[in-house]
Length: 301
Image (spheres, rainbow, N blue to C red):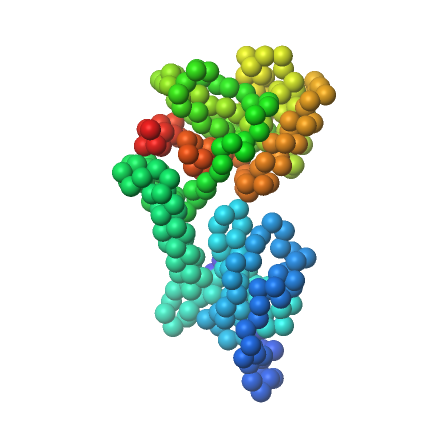
């Protein structure tokens, strides 16, 4: 048994043992409100959003559905609202994880909603092509962003500036997955002249040198210089000493540009880097391979 499962089982047993001294279940006839749960979880909630609260399959525990970066997950809260249990509830009799079953149901509901919205935005025919391009399991990861809300200043353009198709890329020069995606974007551009990628610098706070390097990139005098510096940053990413040297240059506009990018990401709930914003504002996170990027673009044409 994995440690995480053992820990969950231990916590559940601890909860159950406390109930053995009680004459009746501590869950009242009156359902607990989302407001009460939010208040109880506020010290640890962070950017997670409480979506719903119901009784769980286990007596004495509430099931709380939280949404983190667009993904809905179940966690469990004891009846006193003092103890949160994050892990799996496993039915011994049925020999299955009730938590995983719940997650699968939540994902299926989310996919249904996404498909309905996609049909309204791009039409049924394009949706079928898009499903084949991305894979149905990945549909729950799709988000929608208003393209007009993307900050305009400080973008670094790769590809034909006059290309009809624009894909925006939220990237961090110190992010290994961004480096991987960057090489995939180059593969796309080696074959396609009708696509351009506009890079939005989004330095993550836990990357020590990302912000100075991002500022140096947006301070370059031309788009060509900015491209060269971003390419160099990805090339030197694994050598932190050399990478840090790239972040020595700054300018008056740098702080504002990076701040605007970060505020935009927070507003539209960008969960991490890299993230691609395709036509119609269809947004997918992850280092997608070149052939899949092309398929998605062609499906949306």
